[in-house]
Length: 467
Image (cartoon, rainbow, N blue to C red; front, top):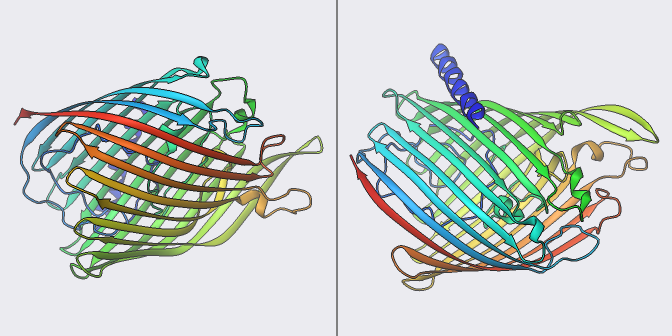
């Protein structure tokens, strides 16, 4: 993890140097898969410097610094979870129901100064599987986030997150996987395997004027899989990934309601140490419009140029396949927020990482979520996600010799939450997951159905540490 964090620092320095030599932010070139919501990480009590415009999402601010309260904060938390899964063995030839339990402590230290915001956090965890005791394992997640205003016009942001888990849902399950430019597929395959991953990002933003911002971004990530049971050995064919990306983006704020911009981003994907290597170049423009206090709309579009090198074994021989193509990429997000309820919907098409089941993938994604405050202590969330994924390499080959490889994901979720005390909250969840694969695993079930019910109890304690 230290090596990954060091790379972030290097990327930040390079971005600053390039901006100074050339002398409101645009979308980052990649983001890590969103983890499951964790209310044990309590809200901060005040804000430090406002982060520059970083995503093509409705409602983001283009302002740099506001007045900030200098203080430090310690947050301690504990989450206890019990779950039932009707079928935890994704694409297995036999169904496997499972009762599981998790105990996850949390600690975070946040420090805010007028020009600095810094958070260090660590989450541990013990997962207990009732039917598969040999799969019991420890999990851990460490994160570091630093936002620094090092001059009146320059701002730097560094984020590093490392996680290790044998719980397939803690790594990938999301209520709302909002698609944005060059974001890894927010709806990914849910594997029955241990997952180790790290994501690091560094960006430097320069405020050209009151309304104009240019941003340089660099990211690095890796993902590794391993079996933790020999029963479902087909999971050994999941794709490990090493990825790098970088880009420069420009943003212009026309008014408080309207902003637009564009930029160039490049992403390098290396699957299973050279089994497939891809480069994705993206030229994209975006526009954000705050139609009213309640309704906001954002969209992005632009061409992507993909080059890929793939190793294939066919009829006892090994071939190297080279491919390239121009493809369109686009996305649209709509958000609405009322006094007691909120709604979000999004759709996109882009080339991305296939989440382990496939390598370079063409992804069609759609999702929606509705949240309502039911009472002073109760609130509910209803969400839906759909994703269609097709292998970039297979889709360009002769279908008679190499059939197209695809998988689809459909996921519906219902959450009910209650605030028991200022420090204690409880959540009840239900999720239905359906995944369908074609021409990927030989001898595996092409369809995967899962009903998951779980209840969690979270305790969060915040304590100011002084100035």
